[in-house]
Figure 1 (tube, rainbow, N blue to C red):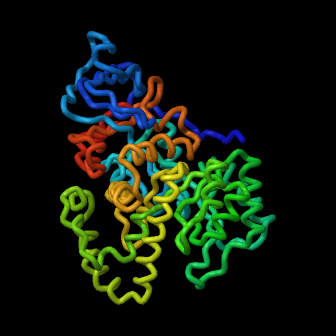
Figure 2: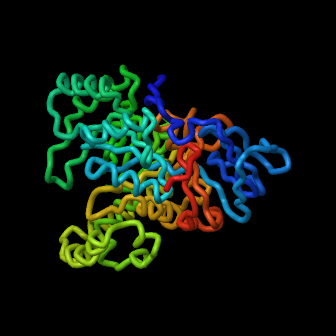
Figure 3: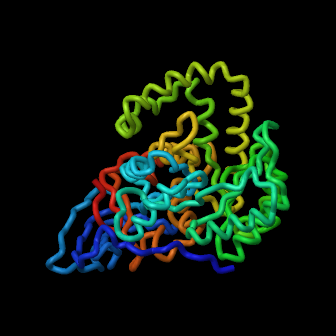
Length: 407
């Protein structure tokens, strides 16, 4: 099925002129999973990648601005496939961008401000991470006919994806009726829109995979997955994000994690928000559900490890910008660390997840995602290689969106 590509008006917003910048002597990782190019030259003209490859084979115009990146690494701009951006949107997308998150998908409750900012971006005013939005989520809807009408409205708003939630929230809510979920999937696909789904339980994941969902926004957390589900997910090329940082966020403050003292974390948020972990250490210690929360994390990690080893299409999503809190920007880097440390993935697999797989999941891979000639120049510069240690994504020295350095 061919899905619509979100509007790309203004993707050159940071580089409408034909100015050429040449980045030289970098270690270049393109996001496809191929080995990096050592001593690479990377040429950007008018916000797009004009050429790239070994320095010995790429020749830049004499009039170009040259940036020497000797000893540093270029990676694709990080795409977050699962975030919440409906509050303080303008500030939030700036924070994402400062952390090298060049695109983020808001999966529910986004509202008019998100639409306004997204549309402004596509008219040329970027001002932060590129926005993709589901606008609303289908969770408490009861009528399949009304649900179809709401999907039609989302299509009129040019929503980038459709989001459904099937979860009884540990028996505190009624699950979305399956006939409503089926109606949403069918109507969305008729309108060439992809459907992303929040799930918790194995049975709901299997139902959705069997019936055409495009992306699972969380791992299965009520049991270990089996070969039957894994094979079906692979067969239907469903993407899944594990959101391990989300699972950890509901108990980790009790453990006083080392990253609370990391300047990369501290410098990216406000003094007011830095007070929150101390409060959460107390409240989470008293939470009667903390053992269940830890178990959810353990199962999510086990299931990610199984799926990654089996070749399931793994994306990167953090569910940040929400919760107790989940700090936007930093939590994407934490997510990547957990995908390696607890999910058994290699750093290269994680880089491929946030670039190639995530851009494909959003249907924007012809323009964004991996680094290739002709694509939009969204990329990050790191002082150290993430292939040596995935936490080296935190050695961020520059972020470029549309070929222009984000300040």
